[in-house]
Length: 75
Ligand SMILES: [Zn+2]
Image (cartoon, rainbow, N blue to C red):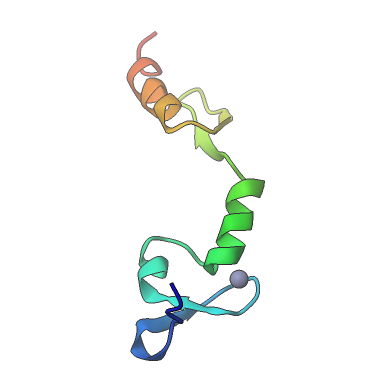
């Protein structure tokens, strides 16, 4: 595809390289352009999840989040 983001379709600037990227991407929660977002996704593959015992664990798999939610409450 050779469609460049132009005009009113572009409303956001990448926080890393200041490139413009489509507003739709921003609405998905991304604050970087596609190329920077791709690098970022490779560098940071986990998110930190606060546990009920007040410690934080890194989670790389969304399925693990579900397990934490269902099993973490029981003791
Ligand atoms: Zn960028």
